[in-house]
Structure formats: C-alpha cells, structure tokens
Image (tube, rainbow, N blue to C red):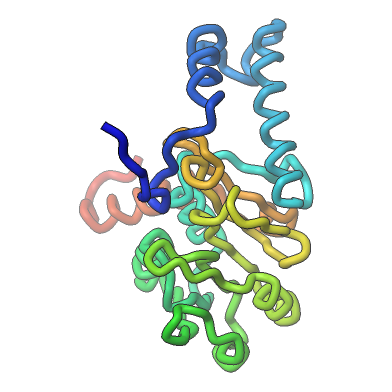
Length: 248
C-alpha cells in the first residue's frame, strides 16, 4: 500500500538513507565502547565520532564554541535542563502565548519555588507582538523563552527581531527549535541566542532519543547541573514526607 506521510511535526519519515545503516554499524561494531573510559584505538574512534558531530552542529547553527554543544535525550530534556538549571527564586521570565508544554509545565512547576512568568501576546496568526515585549520586562526578568515555530499552527517567530531586544536588556534568550532545527536556518550569533534547544528526530532526520543544546559560554557557566536540581527536589520531598526521620 502506498501512502503519503504528513506527520513530520511529530517525527520525520522516512529518515535520511544512511541513518539506519550508520546506527546498525555503530551498534554492531562499536556500540559497547564507553567514551572517555578507554585508551585504545577503538575508544578514540568513538570519541572522534562524537567530537565530529559536536563540531558539525556547532557549524550548522553558528555557535560560539563546539565544547558548548550538549547532547541530551530530546528537546524536552534540553528545555528542562536550561529552565531548571538557570532560574532561581525571585527570577521572572517572559514566554510567548504559543509555548509548548515542554516549557509551560516546568515553569508552572517552578511557581512554587518563587519563579514567575508573564506571557507575551500573539496576534490571531500566532505571531508574537514584538511591541509588547519591553513593557513586560521587570528589573528581575532574567530570560525570554520562545518557540521558534508552532507545531499547532506552523507560525514562525522572528528570532532576528527578538534577539536584539534580549541583548539590550541583558536577558538570556532561550529558543525551542524542536520544529525548525534542520529545516529553517538558525544563526545563534546573529540572533543573540544563549540556549538553542533542539531534537534530532524531526528536521535533522535522525532517530528518536537524541537532542541537544547549543550554549553560549556565559549560559554554560550559569547553569546548575541538572543532577543537583533533582537532588534538591529529593531532599525537599524527604524533608516533607519524613520530617522526623533520622538525617543520614
């Protein structure tokens, strides 16, 4: 049966012709190698594959430093790592009214941690109202998060117009490029993007289970590693659930 696949906003299909063979080759011939754990030629070969991929992503998006290309499991994980690693009690964030749950759920969760957000309105086509951004900026506003393209209506937001506003007001510019990475050119430097979050299985035509972040050096230094955030949540849960438990 012949059919036309139209669900590329969910995941692209078919994948690039060499994706399946490259994955099969890796699993068959190199998949048991842990990078940075061995000093033999095969381990170095796997490391080189990862470094080359990092360099190519850096070049594709015109990042600041290949060492600040971070690999994750998907774009949701990327966004959570940036949002929960950057924000602290008292911070304020701006988001558009077109954001995905990958952004809105962690922000809503962080309301209990003393972090607030305001929504930048969009017009009936889903385009952000640029003139509404600056009036919403507060003294404690630290970041602006934007969905580059909506998976619902397809609206593409003007990163080149939003980025300079963020730079002028010293806001961290965080971009959700789930729908556009690999489809629409994105220039991290020209758009003043501090964290570009992407997935591998859509426009980049890769398999599910991969994603990443392109960071500036400043953003990389400001992020708290995610394991520390989750450890704090575990301690909070323990203290509330077992207030009289012995502290180990």
